[in-house]
Amino acid sequence: MSLDISITQTVKQFNITHNLTEMASKIPVTDDLPCEELNLYKILWHPDELDIFYLSNIKDYLYYAKTYMENHKDNLQKYNPDNGWGHYDNLYKVVEELHAISVLELSEDYRIEVSR
Image (tube, helix red, strand yellow):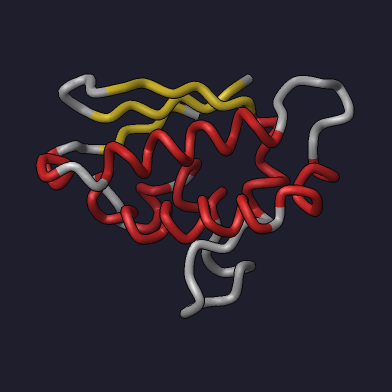
């Protein structure tokens, strides 16, 4: 099982294993709320439940998450799945690429769609 993230106009599609949900849930996306309330897992796996429908809506969250991941790599790697399906680097690459797309001027038109 995995998570498929699509940005409409098929800018890019990402596939993330559900084995990385524990790690994603430990990654904060803002200083404004505790990680338990809002984290990378919630914005990537359940954006619809947060009324997040456009990539531009999560641009700042992605930047925060990317920076956090860079500064806490060693700590986050302990959440690498024991079965070997998924790894810190896989999740970081998706966050990094999503952020790069989100800062484009047209990103306000890119709709996020997930399939769980």
